[in-house]
Length: 179
View 1 (cartoon, rainbow, N blue to C red):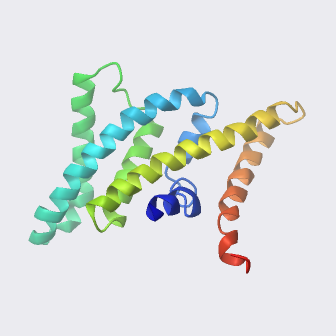
View 2 (tube, rainbow, N blue to C red; view 1 turned 45 degrees about the horizontal axis):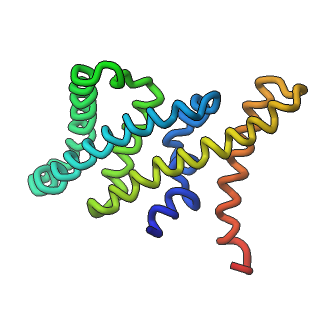
């Protein structure tokens, strides 16, 4: 549980590692569309991490061929995308930002986790982090959209500054003598 909280809020996968920042900016217009994105990508990421974790742990590492993991990961993710495209054509169209998020999360899980349970925790925290911060940034956007004096480029820079301030707010417990 502490790993999920750490990678969701303190060292957010979205802000610290940049996995999903483009999704936040794209789904900011309509956060309700993110539910379909979550279901589609959660299934893909779980299948990919489960298969690739086993292949890495029990096949590639004992053979000393761990350097093939990135190539195997890309091949497997594209094959999985192709299979989903033929079986579920309505939901299988992956946008580039969806592909970047799911691929980045798979690579992050495979290289950061030392056990399969940690992979599952990282997947949960990645999606939870994206979910939480889409709605936080959406609330900031709604507050700034009431003020018509902001132009589009001012709004974009304001969102980036807001994201940076949220990230540093979680590190205040490390700096403050009261915690």
